[in-house]
Image (cartoon, rainbow, N blue to C red):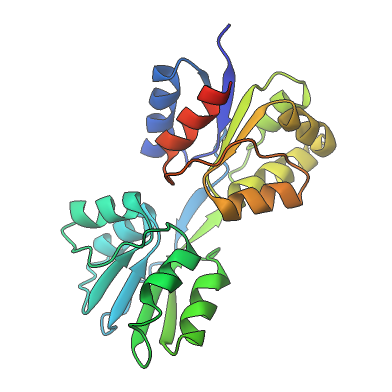
Amino acid sequence: MVETVAFFRPDDERAAEATQIMRELGAEPLSDPMLAVEPTGETPREDAAFTILTSKTGVELAADGGWEPSGEVVAIGSSTAEALESAGYPVDRLPEEFSSTGLVTELRAAVPGARVEVARSDHGSPVLTDGLNDAGAYVHETVLYRLVRPDGAGESAAVAAAGNLRGACFTSSLTVEHFLAAAAERGVRSEAIEGLNRAVVGAIGEPTRETAEASGIEVDVVPDIASFEALAAAVVDRL
């Protein structure tokens, strides 16, 4: 029997890529985008000693805005690094741990007294900015885009509530929060959580796992590599 696995990537090439990955793994994909991008029109400042980009979307918006970096360019993970290289930017630093904590650890010794630009979405973790401030950096944050829940999101919540979902791949804390909000709007929040807890739930990293578990969602797998492909493979393998 083909297992239905939900994912929540934006309705663009990322959802199409995820659909292909799921089918190659032998699962039935259920694409239920929980994030839509609203650009702010801002670009990263260009006078920082370190500029941190945290997502492929942020890199693309910075490039579209004609951003020219000064100092070192820092990526939070492999997909961001690949996007930077594709756009013609250098990747001077890539932390071993693809998280805000990992970035702080990577930069702590280098940033005292330095200007650090953090360019990301409006839902960025304060762990990064607070940690860099505590390390002695002069931190400036530019919000490149807002992440909103698309109208009509929540098909996966209904499927989970009905007991017909076998797996779910959460790629950020915000996808968890939007899934639960969509379930609540449909009047099936508790049933959707119960359905997830009968399925195999994957989280892309520890912050996402913590968000899910704080809401009563049991997380079964967290891949060693913070990529959708690794997450999907881990969920399907557990199935």
